[in-house]
Image (cartoon, helix red, strand yellow):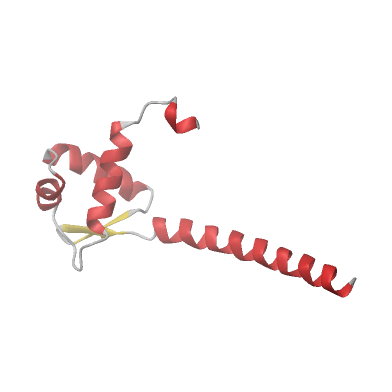
Length: 100
């Protein structure tokens, strides 16, 4: 398995921890509050937040941050791909059943 032979990238892990935390929040939350929650320095969290904001994974609202639409966009693309596969499989099954 590829995961066994490659090292983990700590910055990616930290960014995902920030996103996972934001996904649990009902209201925008400040950078320092996020930093405390994920136990990272505020400067590190702020660097992650502005980078994630550039890619629409995080959105700044007033003095706080919340999830952006980036993750939803990826989810929607994956869902569409899976639906397309399901439709092709269903058509193939129908063709096989009609050929009996």
